[in-house]
Image (cartoon, rainbow, N blue to C red; front, side):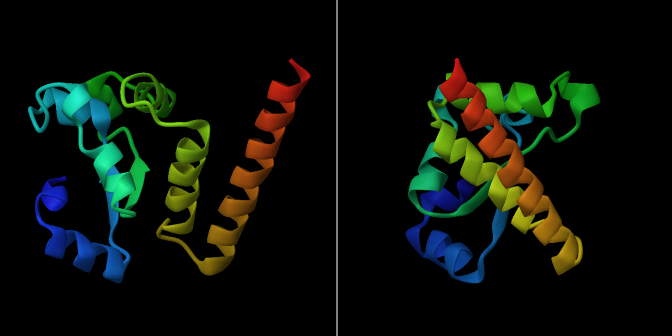
Length: 122
């Protein structure tokens, strides 16, 4: 998370495709950030760093992935498109075979299209 403090480090992380797993609630609980309004995820996205939203340890932080997504939208102002990009980054960065990654990406896209269809029907 401190990657945003040094442009050279951010450039290096971007060049190497480093993926940052961001756990908003855990970061708050552990004191990495004092307030979610000060969380660097938005800045990391603006720096075009690869980021994903995660739960860290749901049993300790009492959170779910859905909760983390809602926090990203409601507290950090992520748009639906930015949230979609986070999920795609997670799927394309998963530690699995390329075929499994392709399957995950296809599943994410299918769910995304279903979600958009529900929105337009409402």
